[in-house]
Image 1 (cartoon, helix red, strand yellow):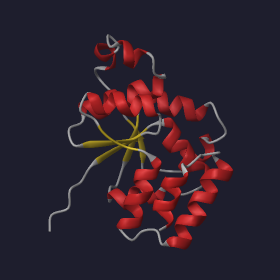
Image 2 (cartoon, helix red, strand yellow; image 1 turned 180 degrees about the vertical axis):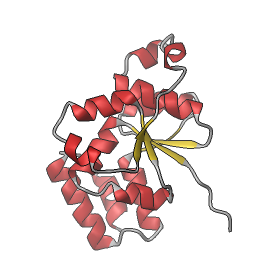
Image 3 (cartoon, rainbow, N blue to C red; image 1 turned 90 degrees about the horizontal axis):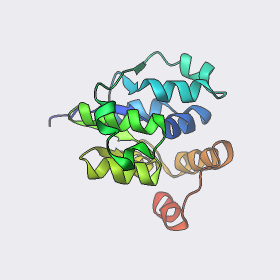
Image 4 (tube, rainbow, N blue to C red; image 1 turned 90 degrees about the vertical axis):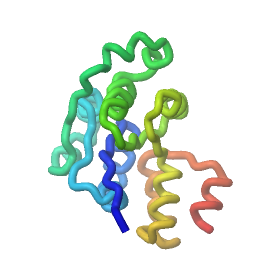
Amino acid sequence: MTQVNHTVILDTDFLSAFLKIERLPLIREFYQVETVYIPPAVYQEVAAGEQLPRLLAVPWIQVASPNAVQLLLNDDALRGLGAGEQEAISLALEIQGSVLLINDNQARRLATSIGVSVVNIPAFLSGCKIAGLLNTEAMSDLITSLQQKDYYRFRQDVLDLLMS
C-alpha cells in the first residue's frame, strides 16, 4: 500500500483553534507529514493574538510565501477574504497535491471552485475518527475543548455523526 503524502497548509482559524486546545500534533499525525506550512499573513494574524508563544514552540510549522497572490487578487471573491485566507488559498493553489485546512465557508467554497483541496474541522475530525486516531472519549474531549476554548460551534447533525 502506497502512502500519499500531502503538503498540509493551515489557515488562521484552523491553526488558532488547534493551538488553543493544544492538539496541533493531531494534524501532523493524521496526514503523516514532517512539516506543516502557513503563509506569512497567517503567521501575522496568529502573532497578533495570544497564541504566538504556542506557535513558536512548534518547530515543524514553517512559513512559506505564495508567489502568485497578486495574480489571484484580480478575483473579486478572493479580494473579499482576509489576508490569511488569500495567502493560504494562493499557497495551496501553487503546491500541487496540497490540502488546505480552513473553516471559513466562503473561503472554502472559493478555494474549491479554483481546484484547491480543502478540509474543515468537522471533516478533519471525521477523518481522524475513521483512521482510528480518536475514539469516542477522545472525540468528546476534543469537541468540548473546541467549544470551550475556541467557541467553535458544531451543527447537531455533525455532532451526532462525530459521536456515533
